[in-house]
Image (tube, rainbow, N blue to C red; front, side, top):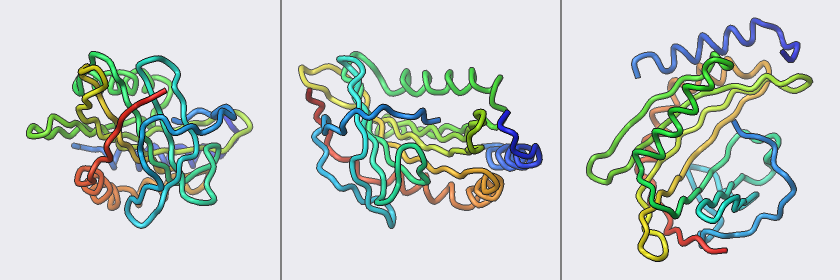
Length: 206
């Protein structure tokens, strides 16, 4: 544990469980941010403007890009947008189920983990929103809330793929419990804004 007072963790856990009743982002390398999804930036979401800050193409079928407001960094951010693309024989339900499985596996080590799932039968989209925490030695206690909108993607060559458009919010240290209490009111609005957002056209390229 990091040495942060246990009361912080207990308060964060209680707030997280209340938030989802009934209803992590690793440090990056210094790889340059190359635009690989043909998404014109900057991206406006809510009251913020986000610019490409980091990108990765870890496998032939997988692309990931992150966007931050001015003044934020990948190592210490409070708000982030994510766009990902899987250009393979994949479907929304399976990719969303993979995310849920990872969250279930994380529960044994992170008691703050909780999640909810919303489906749109008309579009075939799924939104998974979840809360998790990180308590690494010699580092700030972090609580993170993410909402991932999974949508069908027609990839080059006619393969079926999946696009992810996500939002991420973080709080650090003593702010964690208050962040989660505030999230109880903010969460429905953020999810509604995410669900209504006009997704940008995505065309992955090397």
